[in-house]
Image: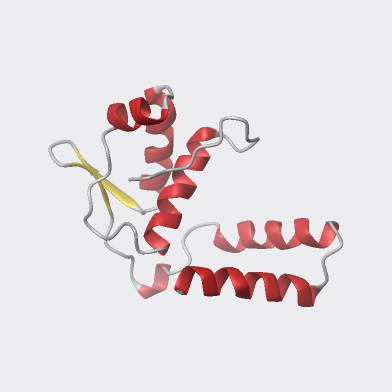
Length: 124
């Protein structure tokens, strides 16, 4: 699993790990049932405290994006049913991002076009 972690970013490292897994699944680089590195392995690979990776995995588990089994380790979860398509807190997070763009002066059209370009990049 290839993650890009920016140690100078304002985004906490556990959040960067979580976001990297989400982007990997969305981009098709990680698929359902695929194993993730152990907490210790990933922590060693990126040079962070294992508790940081553990926090990211706990968040991913809470969001239903991974399943953790003591014998098999952490794996990408099977996609949820259609009634859970957007996951917990999606609308709140999306509204926050849109609000931040608006505060910076982006118009509705600019935000819509930008989001459309991001969607095209994910779906190819």
